[in-house]
Amino acid sequence: MFESIALNPPDAIFGLSEEFNRDPNPTKINLTVGMYQDESGQTPIMRCVRKAARQLFDEAQSHVYLPIDGLGSYNRLIPDLILGHRHSAVDAGRVLSAQTPGGTAALRIAGDLLKQVGGVRKIWMSDPSWANHVSIFHGASLEILRYPWLDRSNAALDFGQLMETIAKMDAGDAILLHTVCHNPTGVDPTPEQWRTIFDALERQRLFPIFDFAYQGFGISVDADAQPIREFCDRGHEALICSSFSKNFNLYGERVGAITVVGRSTVNALAVMSQFKSIIRTMYSTPPTHGAAIVAKVLFDDVLRRDWLTELESIRIRIGELREMFVVAIKQRLPEISFEHIRRQRGMFSQSGISGEAADRLKEDHSVYLLRSGRINVAGINATNLDPLCDAIAAVLTNRKSMA
Image (tube, rainbow, N blue to C red; front, side, top):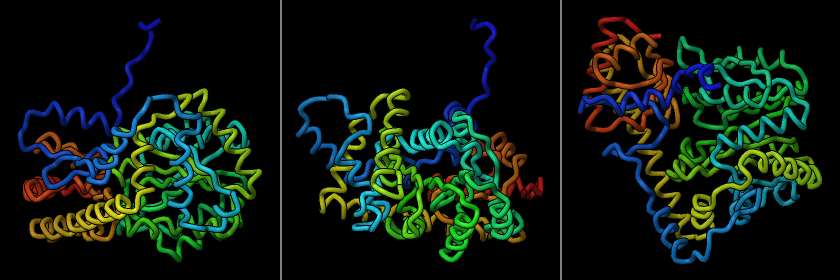
């Protein structure tokens, strides 16, 4: 049997990281996998997380299974964190959350629900989008269609083409929307553009899934959730897939949630029952530790304030890294504009570097980034900034390889 199985190519992101780990060059630079790194190149444990973990260890009595939908205290916190304290939809009982192993599992549950129960056949996602989105929803047997996102001529949102495409979508189609810090471009709609998008969703009768993996990495925890809150103010149904990998630096703990916003309590409870059926056959119950840490931090006023302070420092540092990079690369390549990197938000930027240039950067300079041109800004630091910019300048000067 196994003799007939073909070898799959490595994952586009993790495969590059494996290459990076094998590279013997002591000055190699990794801008691939989306994890926050501090000035020393490490992904630190947040102080509030360390304190919460110690408290949980001291309090632990056993390691029993969680319910199918996860840790109850955690699930009760998610709607308030996303929609804000005392949002009308939460008070009305229309919003329920289930813990998941990361945002990835939440997205797959959403896909299975739409296909198996909702009768949805097609889902639209941005072009470009996170590479794993296609695989996740293809695995749920949904037809995948794309709407334009990036105007590559100025590295800004291609809003006109986006709206034209939405106008052609069929009623009942699902649409996947990055709520903030779009991955991989870092390009987000303005509040006014979000309202126009929501108007179009209403006209076309589309069903939205909000991918909310970077709450707190854009402007603030509350401001980043504003698009979802405004959509829910309209009384519509939605699914929200959230993650605490980034904003708690809990990558390996796999902490996420899927949230349903129904038209009524009865609707929300019915959807939750379907979540549980899907989860039971997928992974049965989620792990405890990461969700318990998040719940401990969010319930404790002191730890919560510490978390918001630490998260703000991460957000500010990423903005400073963007500024440092743009200034440094302009000194070397004044004829090529990287100003778009200053305007983008979150960890990722669509740099505009071509696949050919990315290959040269890896092979000649041990600088690793995706062939799409996506870079993890948080992989830059004061030590590698000049070598990185020198490498990019050398490659682009020789090859003229901007996309």
